[in-house]
Image (cartoon, rainbow, N blue to C red):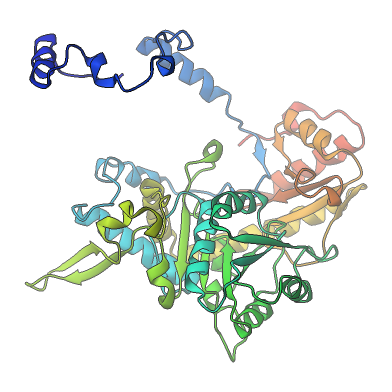
Amino acid sequence: MPFIPHTETEIKQMLDAIGADSTEDLFDEIPPHLREVSLAGIPQGMTEMEIARLMRQRAQQNSTALCFLGAGAYEHHIPAAVWEITTRGEFYSAYTPYQAEASQGTLQLTYEYQSMMTALMAMDVSNASLYDGASGLAEAILMAVRGNRKSKSRKILVPTTVNPVYRRTAHTIVKGQNIELLDVPYDSNTGTVTLDEIKQQCEAAGGDITAVVLQQPNFFGCLEAVDEITDWAHENNILLIAVVNPMAMAVLTPPGEWGSAEKNSGADIACGDGQPLGAPMSAGGPYYGFLCCKQNLVRQMPGRIIGRTVDLDGREGFVLTLQAREQHIRRSKATSNICTNQGLVVTASTIYMAIMGAQGLENTAAACYANNRKLVESLTAIPGVKAAFTSPCFHETVLQLEQSAEKVLAELMHHGILGGYKLGGDYPELGEAILVCTTEMRSDDDIQTYARALEKVLAGEPVMAEEGVLC
């Protein structure tokens, strides 16, 4: 309960002024059967010392296992300066910039963030963040439906290689607007979606498709044939929505440059989660979603967009642009009503990208790729382990086991190793499969520790606890 600085005398004076006998009279429109008389389910308050002890106990439950887990959240090295600066009072306590009265420092930082993201994605415009990558995809789909006036179907092709959480979240958000998400199956050999399969799904849907979603790298870590699919989509008046890992864009072709060299049309919208850029794994968040687009779609973009201008005296200034205050109260006419801005994490990403620079991001991404190759070579040399797909990968790979993936991962975890993500729940056709990930954080010793432990687990041998190297 917040502190209310009113005395009983002051409360009585206010009630007398409006002709009420008690504060309960202010809620007389609530039927009695809906009122909660007691708070029996709420525990008694704790002292500061008791709360501190509880928080320490909870913190000790956090895993310090050697991490080979990805599937949408990644353990990257974060320079100490990033959060040292991010948690300064000027940033830490600043109000999210919804209104024009936001400080110039906050607006300038967000402008710098947008500039860096458009450069990284090779896109024209970036907004100032969304709730997370999954809701970012939903917003991109809503943008595409509003922006593609040549299509009336409201049908979106979504390969099953797109993150399952993103697909479920997008469906939940857009289904109430009569938007249909159509699954496109992947090739069982390559782990990627083929243009022929996309064409077949397009024909089965009647030929009128509003947009195609393409994740790069996809959820399996494989690299999709983005150029030919982008060209085909634009030849058929279909918008292309890219879901990308921002770290991978330091070494892969960014979405704004997808397509053949002659056409170089690029994706129309790019989205994803900004977690790899300076946000720790943090037991699931908070993270933020980024959203970029071509100039012709900027009026359909939700959220905040910061612009740079000069005043009458020629002094540089930063302002909210293309976002009237009424945007947030226009209900059905607004571009979005859920475009939450994770301002503090965006601040961390801006500082992270500024510290790392283009070369630093490229070096990090290259190290992630190199470690993945080392890990896959080490693990697939173990009897009973094989790579599921033949396509090139970035820093995640699907491995198939001859034993229960759930039991293997549980045994590895028991000995201090997060061995990967079990895929059976979302992709039962893959059998006992796991998704393993490496970042620049994994050393050669880490990789060999995992390989030795997995070999012993699969052979039914005991793994000594000390072999699970802790971070």
